[in-house]
Image (tube, rainbow, N blue to C red; front, side):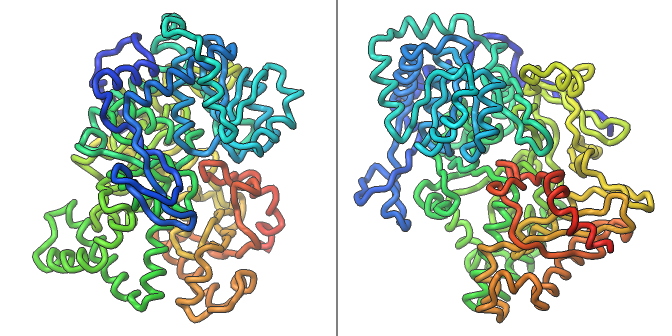
Length: 612
């Protein structure tokens, strides 16, 4: 199959905006809980859920739709009083937290266009976004973020105001807007509809300058309306709730934010991945969204913990049964013996894993990179259905997603209603639909290159099966061509390598070389526990890189990865690097994608050494 078109479930319209969702929810469901807001205190009440962490008792304070509406309108009035005009750009530079969502909807209620900035951005990146988007007002989370903005403020000629959340920015806006009336807000929105720009989201920038994707109110609303039609079991079920911990500067989390407000699913925010399990326990989500690396970490940590407690063999058998039980769902179903083993391990192992994620998680949405079939089957086998999907900033996030009624593990599902997929002659995935952006901000040439005859050229490679389910096979620009002329997509090898507990990151190399090789980094967080479990307690991470036992384990990981490809595509050699590829040192984007060109530039000597 080369084309798959799914008609929209909703009647197309230009009416309405994202700002309308807040008032609608307050009018129709004002007393219901909209958000649970995380805070650390020494006391808890019967109205909050709590968990214990190193910082004390974590409480989750409920916020109703009526309260959220009042807060959004008060902050929106403050932006008006500050001088924000309809169409002005308002920047938000912050970790994922409740105030982010308040500011997002407040800016839309004031008629502004929101420009998110990753809180880890460098001064150069901040300057580029502020200048390119023409940001007039920016709200940052901390004084450290303000310091970054201050270093470039003289060059950001459009910037007027910088507010700091941790220094009472929202309270100040409420005070400023005290004299602004509801009629003033209503007039602001008279000229805003679904065709109006809602946000400019800058791509992560794996190569070159980030490009600003202009997304409209309609991109979010139309995509959300159609997604809810297919994901109703996830979003609309009684007590549906999700804990956002991915950066809200990323389109994936931003779409889920809008999806939850539109579908009235309770939402929470968590900014620190180190407290995630505590936050799961207290918040108790029914669905979560994450990149595959998070699911790999949860699995690897559980396996390592079981091994440390002398239960490694039990966990391994339980994992095999979970995978087998899930795979059987796609065939004739599990037999009696498999069902019995699954029931035993559900009590011994799976229930504890579900409890570690809060005890109520039924679904997880995975995107950003391929998940891998074994992980998909493992999580379904323990009772958490991962709905793998595919989307980009330019498509307002999901174009395709597996849905609860029919999951094909190993694919990213069929197109959502209102979306279409075409596979070009060279295998590139082309996209058309309600979520596809209209232009890159101020970059006509890039827009013309990306949008051709109404189809967005994604740069990704894939195929459609007979049912219209999409499978991602790699990136067009990342295809390696060996000296022998063999085309190799590195993604499948890299994904399988990163699944090993002590592998943090890796890059597969071999373009114009006689064979394929890999550079690998070790996971500093997992090393101490893995080392203890394998009789290497006391061996430092530096020493581990050349230790024979580690080399043997990595060779096994390479051998496992090679099972997915032909001999000509297989990894023949590997080397372990000092350090790691991280966002802080510039080798990963904020969405954890590898900046391949930067790694290849800085580690050129290491690459050449593999082929010497």
